[in-house]
Image (cartoon, rainbow, N blue to C red; front, side):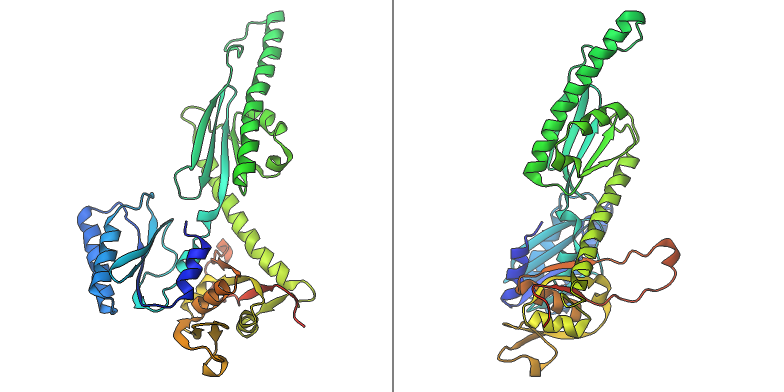
Length: 373
């Protein structure tokens, strides 16, 4: 995942670069993929890209991204060399973007919010457990299978006094096995700071594991009531729980900006294009929330080569120079990054009963570093 500092550097020093934001490699036959790359190269040249840049991007797109389909690619070239090649999990967010510009689009990188969400997955069993550190749409960053003791786990009922002894012995072994798993999960929680921990598997193993987790890890637990650790088990419930947890996390980050902006009778925030631009020009924005659909508004703002970075026109540029007229969402995001603010791009996911009705694009919202007035 590209670091925020890298994105900010791209925005800070305007220079002519060629950009391509396109779909990643899919299941199509090789000839179809080749035709798609040829079309990208042709369109880049039509957009004024130097031939060396277009060829460099074509060669880059030929290389496999190492992500499962669907995925997307964001590639930048300068003077015939690739300066950024980012593979993004999941389908492309928004339209395909191809061109040659002093300021490449930044929203595609900012809309890829799930890639930065790290979480733990624990599939617990009475005799073993699998623990993974994951990020959405990626191969596990780390995985380990923990084999516990199974020497006193009865496979058949022996009956009588011996049965009671077996049960007590088995319970102690299960507890020790899950204590080992809990110790690992606590260590991974401290090391990786996951956003949440999904636990599935045998019901008794889950209970024993959760009881022995430390306070920090226990607060992050999401339980999946399914024995996914069993051979041949259906993993749909586990995958669904992870997807829901990711959506909840993203929604909370959006709600947090709106809540912070409402504090102090609204003096801690700015709402609407005019007030948000004014706050950005004063470098007072701490977090900026943008509706992804602003990208299609057709309206533009002026991007400047130095502070205050954004303007409504030459009269607002002060002693700075206008670099380009950018789509308003791009201009807002650039100014926020260059003044040290966090940018959150909210996707529109209407509920089923709202899907048929077009919803208004939400106004930009900013949580401020210090209250207005």
